Image 1 (cartoon, rainbow, N blue to C red):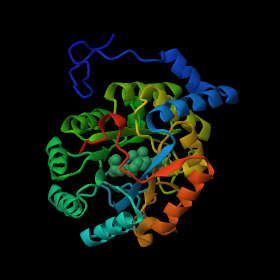
Image 2 (tube, protein in one colour):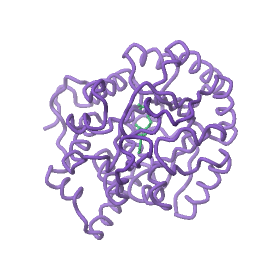
Image 3 (cartoon, rainbow, N blue to C red):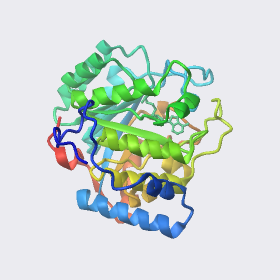
Length: 359
Ligand code: SAH
């Protein structure tokens, strides 16, 4: 049954009636669990077709600036968690960040993604200064933030200053599983609340989760898909968990490539308009991982435009790729790879089709 009061409602949190899902729980679990490669291949093909109806062959580029690896959180999977004393910490100055933007803009990027740990140094005031400075120099670019959980008023202030998008993976939509991945002071409820605030504020919001994180069961992945259907984010980041040796999860195995691709494909089928990155983590577990992600329904790549000197220090997991190259090299490499696999690099802002003019 569709919502009669709020037919076009995408953000209304009190709207309880959801549109009917194209998949039953059984069907989704079947695809999550399958080991039949022909079945997976058919799923990828279907997802790619759906993507092509919305986006053609285009792959959108985002310029990623990893501007601080300080973090007050202690997520058990993450290499830049507070308790990891082995990380050399850094934060970029406003001038250094603007330098990254200048280099990114010269290369043709129309989206800057500012990602970092939850660094208390970047108070609302400092973030506003930064957003204002970028907005002043680049009035037409998209500014994406990925700086974790903040009060609603902060999200609103950043939006008013010119930030348009916000990436905040929910990590897992199962309460019990969330507790196994995070220390007690973090909660799934707060994470979800932040995502609803972001949508209600007017951001293009990005949720997402890791595939193969420790203790994950097929039912948890089902819950992730159901949560995405409920939230209807404009973007969804899906990547494999990869161990980082100095974390409590350092000895756990990395997520499975094929399962990751199936989750991307299912997400594309459930949210046809979504912007789905073929993540760096996907490219880390398999040399062709990102191309395979794009062939299974993804349509975005996020390439690093951070300074070469700090790239290795933003070590969320071990063996992260593309930490030695210059921004221009990464871009050229990816464009060449996309052409070789039949995709069309697209340096436009890459907004969702329903809202190309937003922000
Ligand atoms: N502080 C921001 C950014 C976190 S880093 C925030 O809270 O949103 C971005 C993403 O990297 C995380 O959301 C997580 O899904 C992913 N990540 C962290 N550690 C990882 C690991 N070991 N393997 C794979 N992905 C990881």
